[in-house]
Image (cartoon, rainbow, N blue to C red; front, side, top):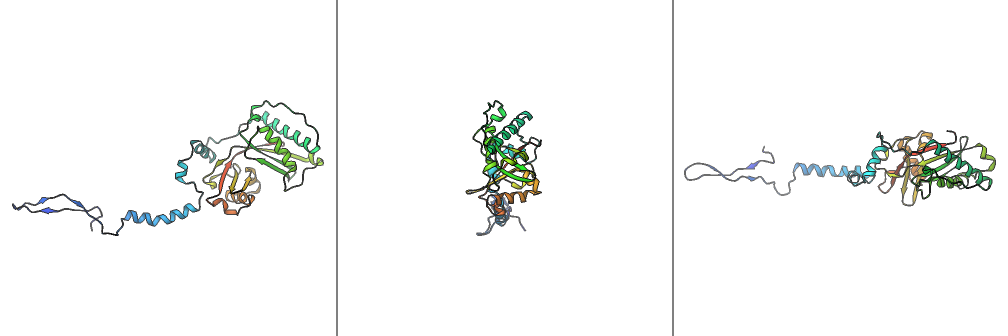
Length: 268
């Protein structure tokens, strides 16, 4: 049986009896027939569309359109050797915890706090967001923060310290009698970055910021470790935190962002 590339050759018979080979013409397919290659494409297309629907909207083509910065961050954040780490020296960390403690006591006791001149460049940076958590033994007494800094880091931490002590609707405001028992934990956040494959993030290393419309949920990296969640459970819990269904992170319209965090605690 001839292949589809077979060409028909025409022969002419001159008067001297010799056969002369004329120009060959390609063999044409009958109308309505399809090549094997195009037929295979059409059979695979539905499956391809279905698998894409179960993933975030940004696929291979979208990844190629990313900025080089996003590509580098994606590599570093997913297990590469050059992982982005927030660099704050030990002395600056101690100063930040000290400022948070002073702010907490002054706010709860309603005492006037003397202002300090901050010259530490690490604390003056407005690049990082921050969350402040207040722990009383195993009990969480407040946790509030921001992923979108607009002020220097030390001011963000001071503001979130007051908010954690008074504006976390899940718990009652902190009382002065609790000050001696409360430990402060500061989470300094790296800038948020889009995540194209949420399941490739690492439990305990990455935090999640999930948005869909006007709903938003944030969970810090250490939360997944404390509760023993795998990444899929972590994604589901972040969706629930946002007031979304568990599987909302799979929806095309849901945006998943990742970040790392530097944990600074009074316990060391």
